[in-house]
Structure formats: structure tokens, C-alpha cells
Length: 246
Image (cartoon, rainbow, N blue to C red; front, side, top):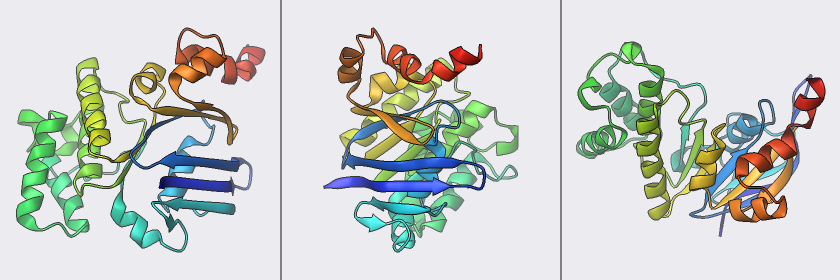
């Protein structure tokens, strides 16, 4: 069964086509890396799959549910760690996680248990009960991850998850992502840290100007382009306009 099914998906804004006739399937339990330069359409694709944006044309399904017809059902089974974190600055990290869990109707005792487990997993430690407004950017990303996972979603969308994290926190976060896959969750990860995607992803899709321009395992893509790293593949495929401008 496919967890994600896109068929000729297109999303147009007044001044730009952000997703351009995108067809793609992602397997259930797959850790999929979605790469692309700034403005390529990664975040718009994720927002469309989460039901935040409506497609202009084409279809998109998450675990068999249509993103337009079944938006409420999709909201129950997905977790989103957005590129721009949404949180309450006047609440503590713990309170942010717990209040998000209440939105999903989690029973109070179970919510407390899950919150404590996630706080330990993301490494908030003694900062757990400080106001989130006092947190660093990396700490906010860790709280956002816990908020996205508190209801144990079947599909997790992690958009630029490790931005602003120090190396130690990044590698701890990698362990959390790997554990999601071990538990059979589907994970869609975007990142500008190409080595991160190369280390974690089962398959990688590269998009540019809303179009899918490459798809395969990291090894397959490196072999196809005779490249030493996935970053070399990415630069070769998406850097032409930048090089010409320079």
C-alpha cells in the first residue's frame, strides 16, 4: 500500500506555479527525502498533502484519504513539524506539547506519559518548564518535533527539521527519525543538509521549479550521475541557474 499518492498534482499561485504536474508514490513505512533549492516547491507540496493548501488540479492521497474530501481524517493520522514553528511563547515546552496533544483528544494520563517520553527523546532536560519564548532556535525545533509526534501519527512530515540545531542535537534527532521508521511510520523529510538525507532516506526525490527531476535511492542517484555524494548530485542537477547568474 502506498502512503502517499500524487497524480498530476499542480498548485498555482498568481505569480508562480509551485507544483507542476507532480506524480509520485511513497511506500508505507518509507523514509523519503524530498530535496530541492529554495522555492522549488517542497514546502508547498507538504502543505498540500497536509490539507493546508488546496491543489489547483490533480489528486493527492495520504494513506488512501483524499486531501480535499478527507481532510479531517488526514489531520488525525499525520504529524507536521513545519518550517516555521508554531508554538505559544508564554507556555513552557511541556505545556506546548501537552496542549497540542489535547487537540488530538489524547487521554490525560497517556498524554502525560507521552509528553515525558518525548521530552527525554528530544533532550529538553532542565529547560522543559521554561517559557518557550526563552528558547533558542534549536530548542524550538525540538519542541516542534515533540508536538508533531505526541499523538503517534502514522505519517510524519518533517520540513527542515534540524535547522538551527547543534551537531549533537541533530544526531539525536536522527535517532528519533530512524526509530519512527523502525516502528513502521512513513516519514517525509526535507532538508538543506544533503548529507542528512543521504544518511537517513530510503529514497530521495529532487524537485526544481515544482517538477520532479530525479528519483531513486541515494546509491542509485550517485551511480547514475557518477557522483561521490548525494550533494554532488544535487548541485549538478539544480545549480545551473545559480552558476549562470554568477
